[in-house]
Image 1 (cartoon, rainbow, N blue to C red):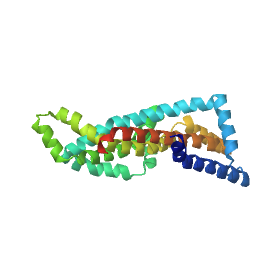
Image 2 (image 1 turned 30 degrees about the vertical axis):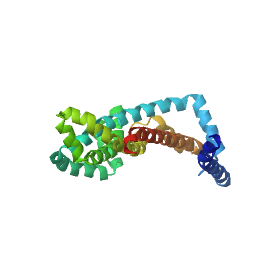
Image 3 (image 1 turned 90 degrees about the vertical axis):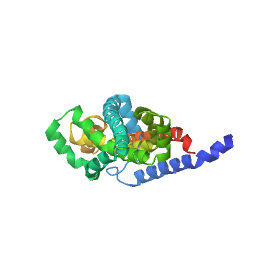
Length: 250
């Protein structure tokens, strides 16, 4: 069993070690104005953590990310199922959703700034807009893929509309929604940094901006590395949750 686990995970960790080695060699072979070695990045990250500055900024960004992302989930999933359940509503709303989804949302940030000013609420709105559409679209597709026979069987047992949602639509659609959640995680992180760049500078976005202005390449790399690791970790968690709720499809 141990040998099987080693063989299964060895390619992953070997790939990570090779990537770190390439990063280290490339960083030592080029100017540190453009790239720094992995070891220097880790030393800078350790300095930021021990100084307390990184923890403070990380908590600010986490609050922004979680608020905007949770609002996107709370609105995106029920709205997606409602659009799938009511075809006339979906036909009427879908063009606007497609228009917003195709719009470069960064271009809307100055408009949001002029309407709402600086502060926490407009930044939450930016994260929400970046992350809600994948949740809506995947939920709609999942709910629309429910076989009509399942609805007919539920109706034959005199299921109410609420019972239909609870016992059929939500369990069937949840794996599709989790696919949208994984896609939304990366977009929400981009929205978080964009909001911290263009609205009031706080959190990890402020760290990146300050490091860039001071030509602190190690600080930029350290902050970006943490954001990337957070994204990978959250997507891995989303994949695990998706597999848990999709066991019935196997």
